[in-house]
Amino acid sequence: MSGKTSNPIDVPHLLLAFFLIGAIWQTASMALNKPLLPAPYRVCQTWYTLMTTGVLWPHIASSLYRMICGLALALVTAVPVGMAAGRSRRWDALLSPFLYIFYSIPKVVFLPVIIVVLGLGDFPKIFIIAITVFFQIAIMVRDAAKAIPEEQVMTMRSLCGTKWQDFRHLIWPACLPGILTALRTSLGIALALLFITETFAAFSGLGYFIMNRMEVRNYEEMYAAILTLAAIGIITYMALDMAERKLCPWKK
Image 1 (tube, helix red, strand yellow):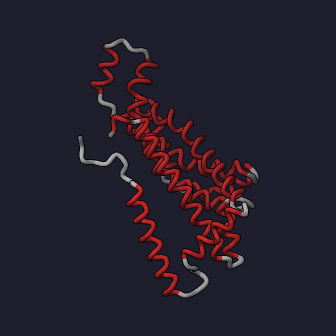
Image 2 (tube, rainbow, N blue to C red):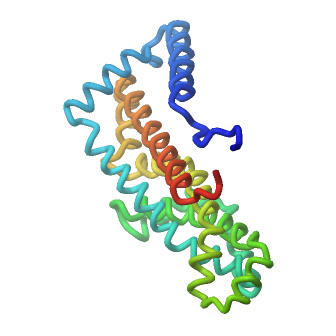
């Protein structure tokens, strides 16, 4: 048995991290002594009130819908592209230049153009998340598919396996950890884009709520929404970590 823990983010260390962050926050709030940085306990009280009165729930639902749809759209399109580029030299030569070129371009600068073309509503926000995350997932899946040892491929061929069997028993298991890793690394980008898109031509979502409360100088509610957005990221990250341990037991 290895000495490594099966879960790198265990509850005691997570609670310790929260305690240290709270202590630093409290110290900074006392040192600044201005409404701009309220004490963490006051923010938590405000968060509880916003949740129990139902003020935050519609904004949480809107943000979750946009983030999940954007990640799902990127996933279902990027995984086939990455696998094709990783397992075929011809497709790699064709697709990789486009992946590298568009990956380096900050897609968020096209948000005004996307809104003009696609109109207002949820779809432009979902699209900008999907198109940004798409290239990161595609590149990581391509690299995972490329890393499959040729000996394993030849073994599958010697067993006269079909293409579906090759995919199911070799390519998919080899790429799945890379897919989940790509999702985890893309999560922070998706949350940042979610915030940016919801501050632009939006009337719902946590990003809109945060900016609205900042404009009216309601800093306690602003920080409560920021904590909610952070909690969504932490919970989603941990869910992906749990999914990897369940779906990829050979990595333990």
